[in-house]
Each structure stands twice: as C-alpha cells, then as structure tokens.
Image (cartoon, helix red, strand yellow):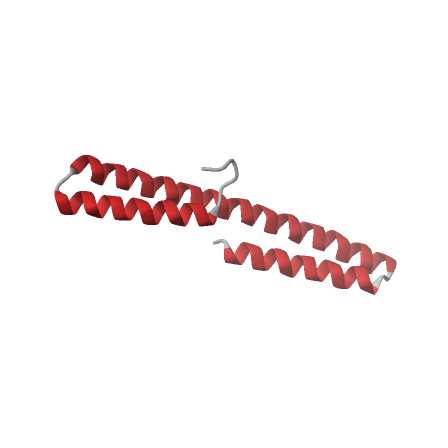
Length: 99
C-alpha cells in the first residue's frame, strides 16, 4: 500500500480479498478464508481514508471559494466572484462524489 490512500488500490484489495475469501470457503480452508476477509477489510479501510481525504479537499475548495467570492463582492470584482463560485461548486462536487 502506498503512503497516500488510493481508491483504485482500495477497490483492488477489496476484490482480491473477496476472491481469496470465497476460494477459501469453497475449498474449506479457514485460514485462506480469514486472510481474504482481512484483505477485504484492509481495502475497505483504505477506501474510507481516500474518501475522507477527498472530502477534506472539497471543504478546502469550498472555503477558498467563499473567501474569493466575498472578496470579489467587496471589491466589485466580477471575475473573483465567478471564480469563487466555481471553487465552491468544485468543492461541493468533490464532497458529493466521496460520500
């Protein structure tokens, strides 16, 4: 596993764990079944960590957008207002995609 949580790696771990768990069950190998379950749980934990990281980035984008839009409002700068709103929407989308 890399230092950064990865959705791709997480889904791979979940799938490989499920395969190993089911093969272990099918052949009656309790150790293999348990190892598969553990790998699957490791993948689930990494997936949740990756989602949490992306939600945090989404929150950062929302805050950045709020600040930029507010500054644009105060200064009458329409470009900053638009960029701020875009950052807010980007943050909303990132958070929604990682629930």
